[in-house]
Amino acid sequence: MDRLAALLIALFCLLATVLKVESEGLVYDYYANSCPNAEKIIHDTVYKLYEKKGNIATSLIRYVFHDCFDSCDASVLLESSKGVPAEKESHSQVGMRNGKWINNIKKAVEDSCPGVVSCADVLALGGAAGAQVLGGPAIKLKTGRKDSRVSLKSVADTGIPTPQSNVSFVLDYFSKMGINTEETVALLGAHTIGRAHCVSFEERIYPTVDPKMDPVFASMLKYRCPQQKTGAEPVHFTYFRNDEQSPMAFDNHYYVNLMANQGLLHIDSEIAWDSRTKLFVVEYAKDNALWHKNFATAFTKLSEHNPLTGTQGEVRKHCSYTL
Image (cartoon, rainbow, N blue to C red):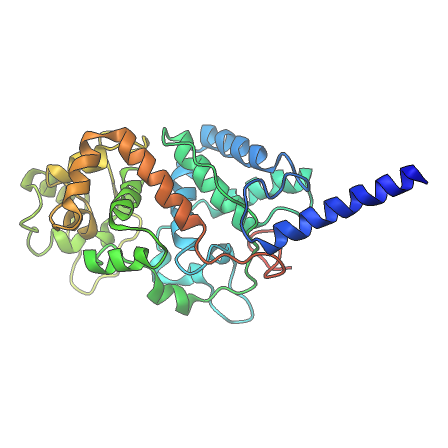
């Protein structure tokens, strides 16, 4: 009888812990009991994929940005359904790639803990691992996100800042997530990796070069991205590395380049000139450790933006489709 009572007490405590976690939203080590190795599996799988396909790391970071603009709920990964275009059909998602590999990460977790870990958590943790594998900071994130059952192109069409957005818009956009100016400038430092398609910055070199751009740098961009004929369809696959010196290193060269008037996108250039943001560009150009620290703080806040938790949403088996 004593053993039965002890067992019942233990089960009650476990249930109380689960209910407490569910009611509190995002918490650290959400899967401690249900899938204790989840975070390690995701981390290790990202590293293995990086060894085979390096740019998966940059893609994962970008996916977090594009998923969390409205809610960190993996809606960005869903396919269109029943004639309703999903977020991935939006013009704001041009150039998004490597989504199929996210399902590889999800499968690795599913093989260990079926139906437990959400795609939203896989994506957030994968983005953090992506930054680390490229030489960025180790970022410990809260978990417990659930997956959305809905993804709408119309929401993504108007919700995400574009490369042509101005500083005021971007600062306001991130401030609504609790991310301040210093942290916003740190987040934009993610542009130190990966690449940008010519259509993202062509207005800065054609028909005339932006006077805020280094002329030699502008010539390099023109060589890589010849001017398109009037009326021609934009070429989305031609690109330029965000940081030619170390395109796959999560370092502060982005800010060093901005100081030399070699910002690629409009918003990159503008934060180096705007009085509200220039100070932080200068600081990060001098101090890589400070940038890493503030990026980690900002990325954490981004990853916690308006998630579905508890009984909201679902846990998908495949990240591209609802249950």
